[in-house]
Length: 172
Image 1: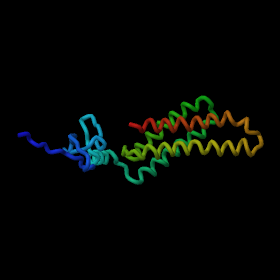
Image 2 (image 1 turned 30 degrees about the vertical axis):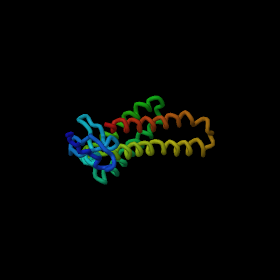
Image 3 (image 1 turned 120 degrees about the horizontal axis):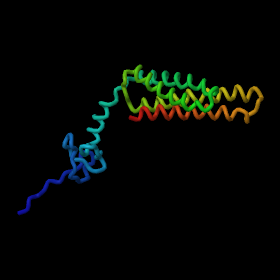
Image 4 (image 1 turned 90 degrees about the horizontal axis):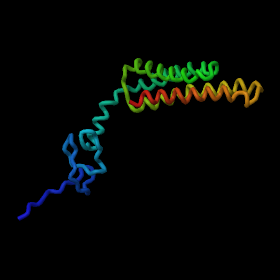
């Protein structure tokens, strides 16, 4: 007489049969719900509770990060028109300084949103002054559009490099 097996159904999708279980809470999960980790598969609730441990920022940390990153990126953008090729090194240094100063100010707290806030702040604080400068110096003075492209190109390159540097440093 054959034994009848109990068929398991997914805890999140009751109409799906499965043999897979979460390695943390032992709950049955289907392959659509399962998240592969280095130690096995986890259910969505265990993943969510695990991620909350890593999000340590407070609401005001985003504001502090935006202000510090924006200030450092803006200060670096003021130098870019004067140095040409060395803008690349200023951008790398400004990105490093922005991340270092922000981490110190917010006591190394972290969240995925912090990366977005800091990158956006760096981009806006470095690109916006470039357009204002270009408009004021080259457009209103009547010098012409063609003369300002070299200066504008370095200012835009600074914005892209400092933003990429901030994002890269925070991706860990």
